[in-house]
Length: 100
Image (cartoon, rainbow, N blue to C red; front, side, top):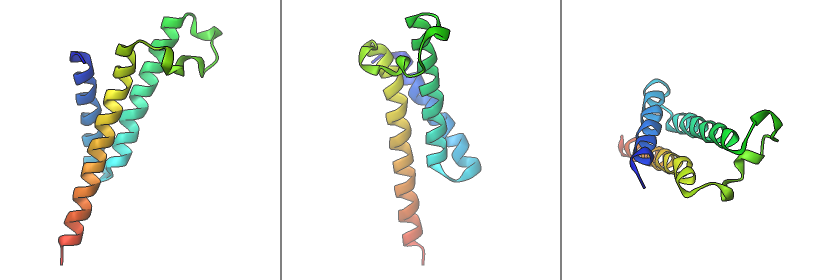
């Protein structure tokens, strides 16, 4: 794990929390952060394989042929966003159930 993986997790969490402030729904923020990084890594893989206009859309999502660094660039932000959304949901339920 290197600095880019940590920065990707931080940016994903920042996206999640900004969306959460406006929508009060952590899962919407997590979905946006995950979609952003999935699209980003898909585009990077397309350009690494070759001319994107000659590829089928699913060819770049052959994650098992990606380098470990590229896999972590995708999975670290996803894990951070899902973990944060779960935590926010859990804490929100606890707070609502504790109210009289």
